[in-house]
Image (cartoon, rainbow over all chains, first blue to last red):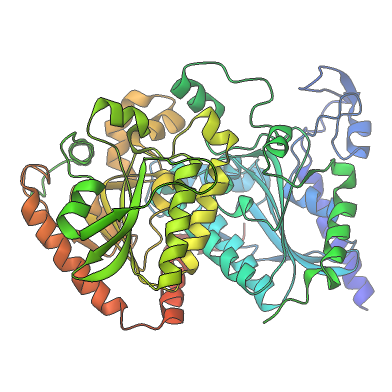
Length: 288
Length: 273
């Protein structure tokens, strides 16, 4: 019986993931934005949207990401209906929100869920850069905070995949406050011994970098991901010179001591499962 | 009260060159201030000014942004825009306040964290995130005052207080109006339009539940006649500290958690597509 439900859940995730893969599957071939090489879409999909020629990691959608890392049939979404209500009555925002919801089939720029990885139950959240650039809204902050609290209450390890352009400008100061809210939740979670694995994907910037994305017990990133607080253009304007090649890349951050490892997408699931195991019962046995 | 000022006029007052800054507030409200410098790692960032002082005879920790008064100071302090070393100095002082059971007062006045190459290389995002997390969990009273410009995460890093007060003409926003207009409309010159929609004035933020109280200013702004502003702020701080001092250490942390946990809770809707 439970097997039937597991199959249905997996089918649902697969369907949602189809919408979440990066390049629209209209043409048979795609040109890699990094190396300029031509790749068959079939090969791209088979390789988890990593360019087989140069290793460029395409941005991928949240559901697709979840289908790559979770054990089959274990995905259960949390707070799926939660979204923002245009709190500042910002001109044009409500219509833009509705358009984004229709286009992506998502209510917000983050999907939160429980699932299993290598048999270990986890609380997992994935930001999706196709929805308002993964920007921090009150709803995004609320979903992340609820996930952290859920993980704490149920003694689950927490995994967050970040991808964000920064603050949701249309929610102004309430967007800013989510940095404090999510960081406070993680601080509590950490004080109780909870394990948090943070995975930074392209791009992770602004208020997400300066809050929950940077607070992992273990910090991982995908190759080539842009990671920073201020945007490259703002910095160039401030210092009045061109930035060096590779500035704010995952590799640059690793060199400067802000990451534990850079993990190619193909090895991400195995690496996370290994880390869960290394933390004793997968980090799930933390104190109350 | 000059209630008829436009948001853009308040931004101008908040940035006024003669507006009292953290150093002036420390002089006016505290005695025996001892500045503590350095992050104990590699540097001292002067754009964060902090140390121990007495507030009505009781030891407290004071931390604030410092823009500087002279051209040399402006340059050295990046006009009050901290680097990661500044936030790590702030973290050090916060941990000491926790250790010695001292209340913390913060004074917020920054355009934002410094967007420079070294600041990124030294982990600006990580430094702000850690400061937010640390401040949120402390078991001593924390009272934050937005005195001038409260810009972005660089301001919020000192803003996770049990109580957050704001001077009447101070502003507090997700980004500077110029940056906001540049990002949203690709046109930084539309900043005064941005001021109108950003809800960055003290009155707006009180209504949104982001701040807890407003300290009145004279009609021409705090710089025109600072003494009554100092007196009003002192009275408010005495009152807030007395109320918070009745809470146990764990209740203080819980109180601060709950306050920020509710931020944006009215900004949600719950309906499926």
